[in-house]
Amino acid sequence: MPTALTEFCRYPIVQAPMAGGGSGPELAAAVCGAGGLGFLAAGYKTADGMYQEIKQLRSLTGRPFGVNLFMPQPSLSDSSVVEVYREQLAGEATWYETELGDTDGPIDDGYEAKLAILRDDPVAVVSFTFGCPSRAVLDAFAKVGTYTVVTVTTAAEAQAAQWSGADAVCVQGVEAGGHQGTHRDDPHADGTGSGLGLLALLGQVREAVQIPVIAAGGLMRGAQIASVLAAGASMAQLGTAFLATPESGANPLHKQALTNPLFTHTELTRAFSGRPARGLVNRFLREHGPYAPAAYPAVHYLTSTVRKAAAKAGDAQGMNLWAGQGHRLARELPAGQLVEVLAVELDAARAALSRPDAGSAS
Image (cartoon, rainbow, N blue to C red; front, side, top):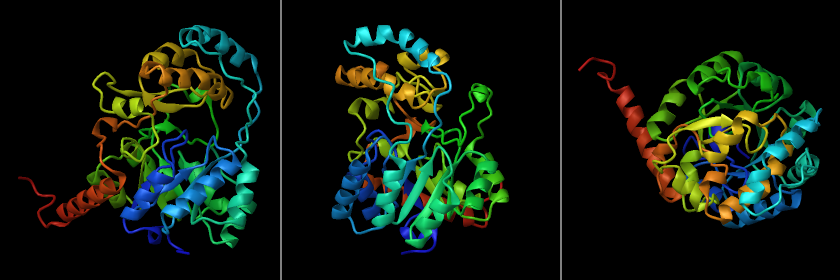
């Protein structure tokens, strides 16, 4: 088993674990086969569902890969806010001819059962989102040779991860698509602009910790990868860039929306899950984002039936279209080819930076 982050793959390119179907065995295998580090997303899956995907991925590649886990969430202190939101969403259920979801789903995402499987049958890398595991959990993975990564959004979170024994941190800038991996969901920070851009955050984290850093957030081109590597990252993680690939499990409507001129920008919203997540601005986000409560994962369960019904009806305006700020740069390339193109772009950018006249005026 490699002992350094960069030894897992040929290129410093990590395919982000996108929960909800985006990153399955086919995508991870293609990325690994091309020289990147592929990831499975265990979030929203049962422990057995995760295990079956691991077995499938192993049948597709002999390369190292990672699995991402969601940390358990605290119990909701006030369930009435969810019931108020249920009333506000009644029209959506009527429009899509469905029922709103049951909010009594698990809040631990099968965490302990997934840990047990990954300890008994280790994979190369395990990463964590929405919090930091205990030192005991990280030490147990170290004993079986698994490299651990904790997603962080502040320098303080990075320090906590280092103290707990994580091998590396994944620094997630505010540009990133999907859920922000904050360790503590603070609704008072909504709309305050408190989230840091990737380069600013990367600089802070690099000065705060001594462990390796993976940079994530809005990265779509090899030149951008070069920039974060120059700023001190060991690897770059890309999610939205891989979302449009044929191997991605994302809904075709979602893939098309990434470059559809109808969707001009992204915003952070609680509308679909109750936790801040960046997605393309559509009707559902505009109408319900301002009123959605901080109630994850209850809101996720509540809206799941509507989102599925919207997808079945071919209506992207009712779906959660997770995307990073660089979504307009998405390329419909096979995942393996995309890794190769990114690597070529990365080499070209590095060569340009190393030229003696790179910094001179024209």
